[in-house]
Amino acid sequence: MNYGVNEKCGFTLPEVCVALAVFLVGIAGLFGCWGFFNREVADERYRLERFYNVLSAMESLIAEKTFCADSLVMVDSVTVRLERVPGAARLAWAVAEQDGFSLKRLVGCK
Image 1 (cartoon, one colour):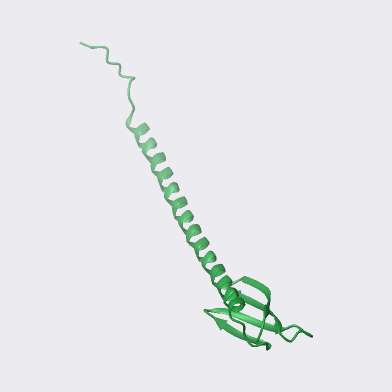
Image 2 (image 1 turned 45 degrees about the vertical axis):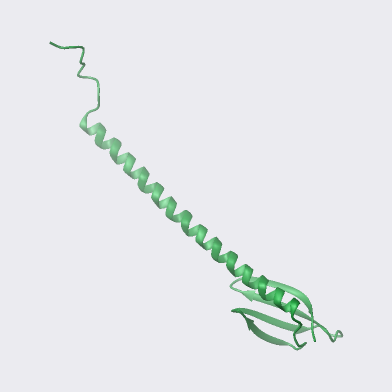
């Protein structure tokens, strides 16, 4: 007795194996993209941290007046160069740099 069961219904073993292979390749691709995305997010956070370090160093120069002299100092791993403005005894150009980030501003001196 054949109760309406058709031998053509369902999937064959090769079809199932191909479907699983395609599925696994897709999952592997998604995991690769996920790793790339996480690396990009971590790199962006690192760049933002460096920018905030440079900004903080510049803000500290503005808040605390330094001596007006051509100099090179390190403030929290940020390189700060001071260059006097010719003709202005109490002004200097301050350039704060760290790993590709640079801010330049005119600051008052003692």
